[in-house]
Length: 141
Image 1 (cartoon, rainbow, N blue to C red):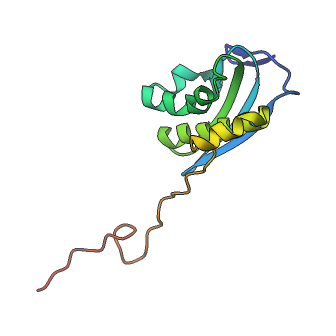
Image 2 (image 1 turned 30 degrees about the horizontal axis):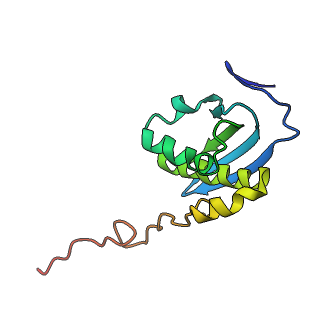
């Protein structure tokens, strides 16, 4: 049993399958085990952590695609980035952990493009510019 605050998920961690997801600067470490479909994110309930429906749907996409929403418990630790990056990092982490948990799920996850990491990152700022590409205003006189 893992007790985090007042949120408890049963299990000793020995049969957990792990997955790491990244998006922008967010990193999510995901543990999946057999259970009743409970999801914990940073020791808080899933609905409490991701309040927007769009973000919840993004995180649940791998579980719904493989129809494992009610049969596994998910424990997520996520840090860095903003809520959108964190949600996408969780999505990739869950997909990778599900692939380990049940290798027969891989074709479904691939077909829904859930095992592909989104490699887009913020471009660095260059010296002499105001932003990455935005120059100063041109003055003719």
